[in-house]
Image 1 (cartoon, helix red, strand yellow):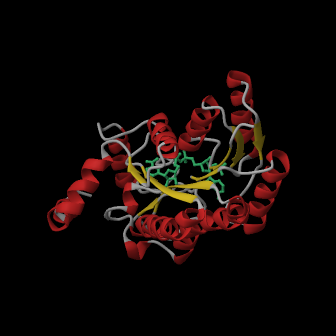
Image 2 (image 1 turned 30 degrees about the vertical axis):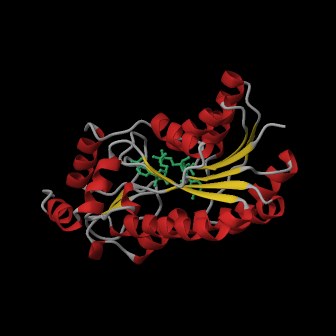
Length: 276
Ligand SMILES: NC(=O)c1ccc[n+]([C@@H]2O[C@H](COP(=O)([O-])OP(=O)(O)OC[C@H]3O[C@@H](n4cnc5c(N)ncnc54)[C@H](OP(=O)(O)O)[C@@H]3O)[C@@H](O)[C@H]2O)c1
């Protein structure tokens, strides 16, 4: 029987590209995201273009009971989960004191607790079978600091810590824990980011606040040579899974992370002087 992969945030961007890559590799798929229509459309596209076997379960990863339902339905349908890809995430940028506690909680709820809920739900089955892979999609922001992105960096550094500590704990039990860290990726992620520059706004990931300059800078970043395509990240996730790598920094981000690791003070001062 073909292996089974469960992917969160699978309706768009990196998650959707990863679903196509794993389907091409022969995996059976369980896909999750909140918006039922886009998730269903992704499932239809996979079935029609690749004849893939797909279970699509609309799920909000911030809700542990919904995640439990996702995992139970996947186990009922396929009998096992070989690979979990934690990918659903949201972004926020803004000066620290102008971000609200609600923003921080909303960000941590998806980017950190969302990952924890899925891991807790899939692990008992993997431990029973002494086999499995957990791939956490982190970020360059979980490997080096980015100014005006303290909440996002905190959430992604938390993912890095969780990934590295769990790797040590679970490796002897046959489970691989892998971190994949993209740089800037051309998806709707940055367009949907919360840009907090003034009074409190909605903490929902769809919130569009008037961070004109910050938004303009994000747009410029999306047009720069640093940008990866979702398909490139999907390939990096696939390679990491096939070659059992511990960690991958994707594309040009590896140069920035490498430079920060070697010269943190120098890179930090360059980042501080980026005009805003
Ligand atoms: N794009 C970048 O520049 C970049 C850079 C570094 C790292 N990353 C990381 O890569 C991952 C994917 O990013 P992306 O660029 O592919 O983002 P994206 O295009 O915005 O897609 C995000 C996906 O996550 C889903 N999602 C959001 N909140 C969710 C929730 N509470 N529960 C379940 N699903 C949820 C979205 O669908 P619904 O809204 O329908 O739920 C969508 O399917 C994230 O972890 C991000 O931090 C991205």
